[in-house]
Length: 173
Image (cartoon, rainbow, N blue to C red; front, side):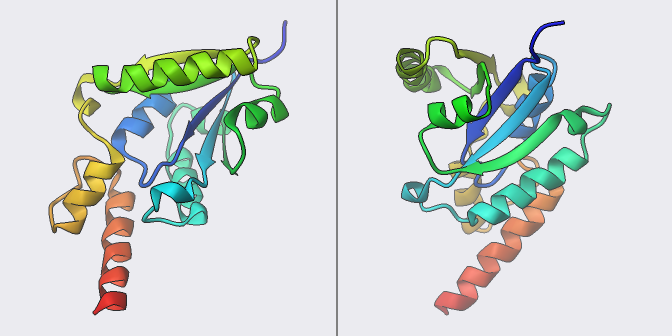
């Protein structure tokens, strides 16, 4: 038996959506161990802190069925993705694609990553039909404007988002 296939699924996950959960579940069928890499990404001005995003992912992983959760780790990172991948001896980067508009950016990133380390493969998973339009930035916008996000995110995440936005509203009131 060869080396275990270690895959990295990087993202900001601000907040985690049903689309992310779908990719995580499907990713466990491709790799022996999946590491969800939560990017600090302060330039995106995330709604949730890095620690809160890690906690939300850990909560969702603990709910996964069929023992998949035991093969999944959640780790924050704040360095070049390829350095993180190399530090963990991973050989696969897993990326989800929602639409053609995602492809150009992801294609460029995959090319750059291959130049940095040709031993690491990028695998793209198409979002499932029901999740194709879900993007964290749209979820946050809908929530900020008082819309119902319960069909876009896990119920625990919807509740956390509502609490977080209420905290912000009190801060700015």
